[in-house]
Image: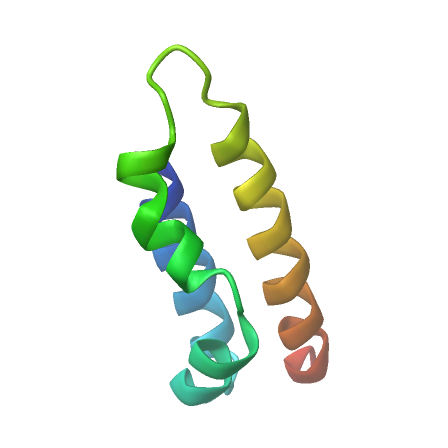
Length: 70
C-alpha cells in the first residue's frame, strides 16, 4: 500500500510539474475512496487488488498527463 501511495505521489507530482492543477487530479481521479479503504479491505496474502487499483490510477493520471505534454 505504501508503494502505491508513493507511486501516486511521484506520478502526480510529475503531472503537476508539467502544469496540471492539483484540483484536476483531485477531481478526475475517482479512486481516492478505494485507496483510502484499501488498508482495511486488502488482505496481506492477496495484493492483486492493489495492482488493479494502481492500473486504474495510472490510466486516469495518463489521461490527464496527455493534456500537458509539450
